Image (cartoon, rainbow, N blue to C red; front, side, top):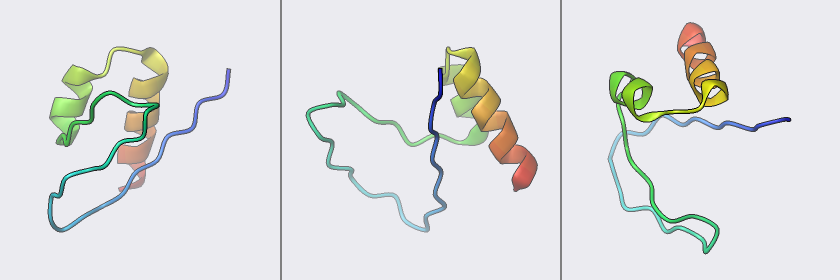
Length: 53
């Protein structure tokens, strides 16, 4: 299975308009994201991202 993850750095938090494909979103710090994410491949992607920062 291939999973695509994206990241962005923003200066101001704003509302996000979701398509019908999604139900909700959440702005998180790195620590919050680690607690929120449940799937191993998502946690791996987050950890790889943080290694590049």
